[in-house]
Length: 84
Image 1 (tube, rainbow, N blue to C red):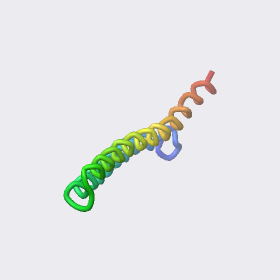
Image 2: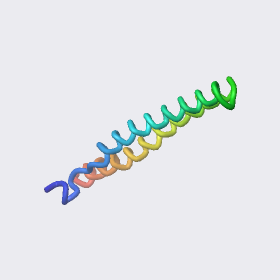
Image 3: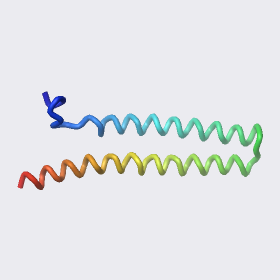
Image 4: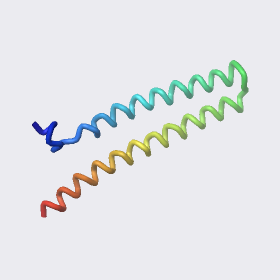
């Protein structure tokens, strides 16, 4: 019954799954970018740029997911404060 009354949120668990899926997508796109730059239309500099962009993408994805988790953590702490 807690599912219907929103006593417990399912979004934090879903965010962890979405985070892993996002990491896989970022990793694959980085590999494609590096391979395309090295073996196709770019060169070493373009490959390094693709690698740096992938690393920045992972960092920004982590920060974004953490921000979503912070909002749910704030709700938990506000419930404790309201209970006092």
